[in-house]
Image (cartoon, rainbow, N blue to C red; front, top):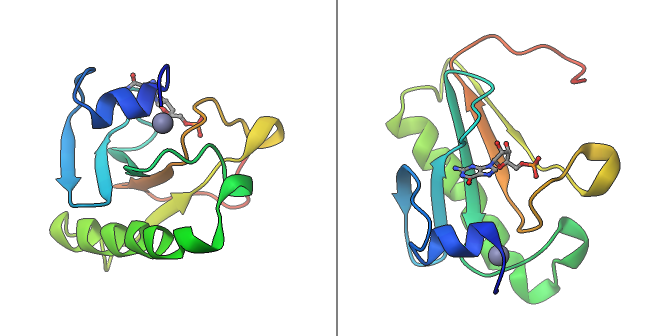
Amino acid sequence: MEDCLFCKIINKEIPANIVFENENILAFEDIEPQSPIHLLIIPKKHIATINDIEPQDKNICGDMLLAAKEIANTMNVDSSGFRTIFNTNEDAGQTVFHIHMHFLAGRKMKWPPG
Ligand code: 5GP
Ligand code: ZN
């Protein structure tokens, strides 16, 4: 989609440190990392928020989780642990309206989140 930051990263119009890519999914380093490993796992299809997911998107949603699993294994944090987060709309602090899974690892996390 035009004027979407993450669509521009998918189309390589804006650079990013890409760590994983397949037919449906791209994962790259967050520009403002909140942990030693902080990635964003996104579908190549533009979907603004979880509210906009349709039943026909269920394979893409599954692919996002499978990408998280593969990345965790590759980065050797599958056993030590990692956190995956979707922020949706204002109260959760969503700032980019192309659905993304935050993938955080490399430090002990606190609960509940702020
Ligand atoms: P949200 O706040 O929507 O859950 O997450 C958006 C994330 O995108 C933030 O963690 C922010 O640091 C990251 N971000 C914003 N602009 C860019 C950018 O141009 N490149 C990369 N790699 N990450 C970005
Ligand atoms: Zn987009």
